[in-house]
Image (cartoon, rainbow, N blue to C red; front, side, top):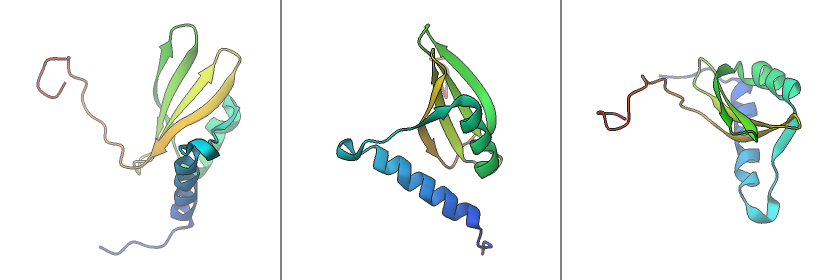
Length: 105
């Protein structure tokens, strides 16, 4: 199945390369900024919307953003309001929640 070339994939590849480089200790670089700004950029560049969130004690909130095309991003916001992208990728698949110890859990 042939796919039409899209500049969006170039953006996604560049974003993925930035994330990969941030994992190298000597060149560690995390993408951080204001929460509203990063959420707006995720919506604009990747059409990602918040799927859910969780609270890590009184330290931070973790949010998962996904798009209909399967891109995903994990965003952490600390108590000072600083947000950072911790991970991003492709191939998101929704699954039904299952209890631990149950098949698939």
